[in-house]
Each structure stands twice: as C-alpha cells, then as structure tokens.
Amino acid sequence: MRGYTLVELLVAMLAGVVILGGIVLVYVSAAGSGRAEIARNERMGDLYLASQIMQGELRTAQGICWNATNAELIYQPLDSTSVLPTGCDSVASANGAFRLDAAQNRICWDRPSLAGGCQELIRDLDGANGLQVAQSASTWTISLQGRYIGKDRQPRTISLSFKVRRRN
Image (cartoon, rainbow, N blue to C red; front, side, top):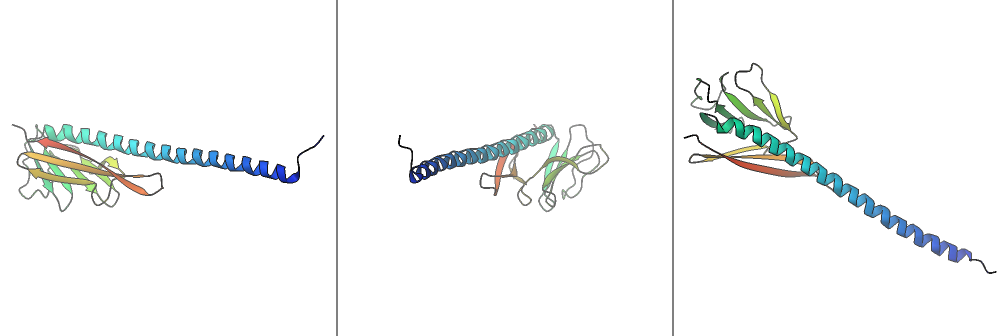
C-alpha cells in the first residue's frame, strides 16, 4: 500500500485553505453588502416617514415661509390666528416650524400650541444640506438629505424630495 507523500498532503491542504478562504471572503462581502442595504433602507424609511409628517402639516397650512438663515420652515396651521411674520424670523406659539439643527444633524419640530422647543422628527441628517427648501410660484419643494454607512464603511448620502402646493 502506498500512502500520500508530505508534499501531496501539503498541496491538498493548501488547495482546501484557498477554497475555504474564498468562501469566507464571499460571505464577508455579502454580509457587508447586506448591512449597507439595511442601513440605506432604514434611512430611506426614516426620510419617508418624516416627509409624510411634514406633508400632512404643510398641506393643511394657511401659509408657509422659509428662513434660509436659520434653516427653518415656518407654517401657520389652519386653526391658527397668528399670522406668519413678515421677515419669517420668529415662530408664534400657535404656529409650527421644522428646523434643521445642524449641530446635532436632526430636524426639530416645533409643534403648534405646545410649549417647549425641539421635538426630534428625524436624526442622522446631513448637517449642511439636511433640509433644503425652494419655492416657485405656489409650489414649495422640500428636500431631506440623510446619511448612512455604506458597504465600504464610508458615510453616504441619500435624499428624498417632495412638493407642497399652496391651498386654494
């Protein structure tokens, strides 16, 4: 009976280790992709939920104004008697506002008729571009931009935009 030589055993073990290493790399890559996809989907879900809340408030508002200096979107609810300020520089207690808190990368919701400042609407936004607002004629375009960790473990941005039209 002839057995295997040491060289044959080492070659077989090396081939097995190479195959096993390839399988492990595929698994690690798939797991990283899965985590990145989950993070992206969670962030998109958060952006979508925040946009739904904002749309619900803004579509029923009597008026909307944007303060770009403070990154604050102020609105006058349907049942509010406090008119929006001319310079859009303050929020009356009966009015509401969505404000980008760039220091903490979140949007604060100052709800109408509630005493107390920031109620966190969404977090992990882009500090510079997390809330962007543009107006053309009677249409407001609001963009939310969030951040998540991608497959390469680097921060990535994802955005969602929606439009709100002035009430008739």
